[in-house]
Image (cartoon, helix red, strand yellow):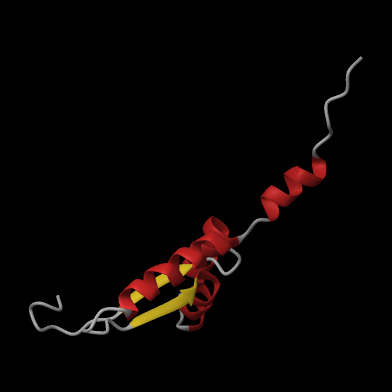
Length: 88
């Protein structure tokens, strides 16, 4: 893209609480920052993107994205209901 003279923007989206993803994003950003052509780089939290989709008018898609990627209540419910194995 840059070699062809086009302009662009590098965008990454990751869950806000995913520390490993954000570490990787910052590492990659530091690599891009060293380039003389200065690739623009934007980071967005997945939760913010989902909220923006809902605010833009697609509440159904936002709800489905939330349920698939950021709603951990089913996992928390399983943890709360878990009973450790006991030996007889």
